[in-house]
Image (cartoon, rainbow, N blue to C red; front, side, top):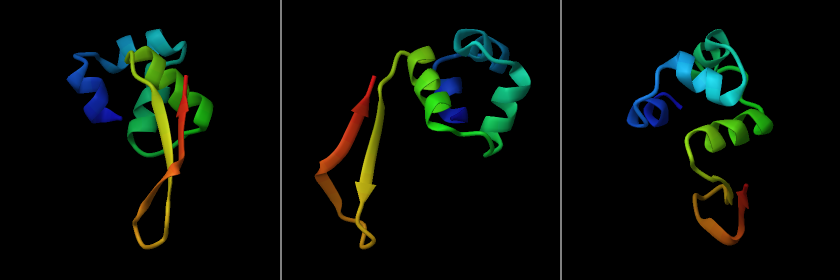
Length: 71
């Protein structure tokens, strides 16, 4: 999340404003907490991205039929 935010040239406060949350919440998320699916969707939208989820086999192979694009 930090990498995406900094690559977009956004401060935590600006990303928080775009997501409709607080700078403190962004700080917590970047620290590894509070990453619910709806929060990740709002992050994707705030950064003009799409959220993509993939279900990966335990051996590491990606099953293309089990990739979900949200938003």
